[in-house]
Picture 1: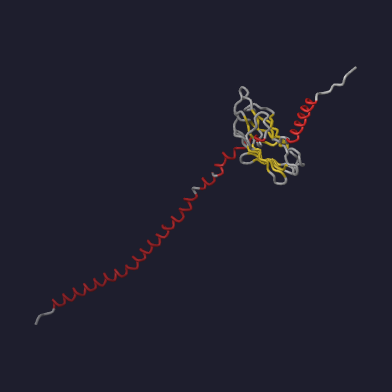
Picture 2 (picture 1 turned 90 degrees about the vertical axis):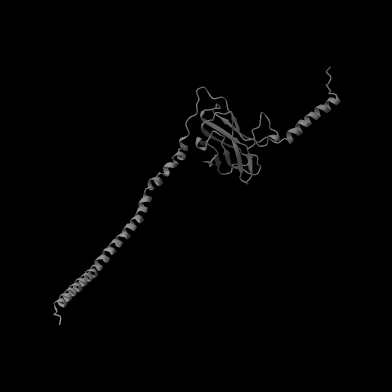
Length: 261
């Protein structure tokens, strides 16, 4: 005859308490929302690496409309190209990162996208600080230091997406800067016309310089005219002196020839 197994009352109370506590804890703890990033190659100095980002939606009333990412040191906006993302979203490089934005996603839908990086830097961890904007204007700032291990506590805040890298593969070396960065080095070429145009300034300045010499020409002609107009006067004076001198000589000769009585 089989006897039914009956758990002692004290044990039943303990088991029921544990179960109730576990259920209450699960109900009270919110789902941990976070942003993550993974890579097709996690070696430092790896080239043409595809990064896959997942931005988890936290709002229950609005959809994600924009992700603004600040790139870590060692990756420039010109090193990043857009691969794929939500329908209708546009990828726009910025001064220190990029923005991906478009029509609002469905409420509760995560934003997932991919970009390709020309080369990963030689470091151990890449942190991609992200501002996540919703259609109602709410902004989640995923910019806190990355959580360590399985730390999903409130103290972790909103950790930025982070990618841990392995040591560079043997023989891997940094590649030259992206050609897209060339415009910054080509900037001096744009100023070249100004440099070549510089000689024109002295030419323009030379035109006024010629004016004084042109003005000096009339001065010389005026002097010549003055000399030519004074010549008759001088000749007249000389002629008068000659005439007077001749008359005086004639008068003296006549006086000396007159007999004295």
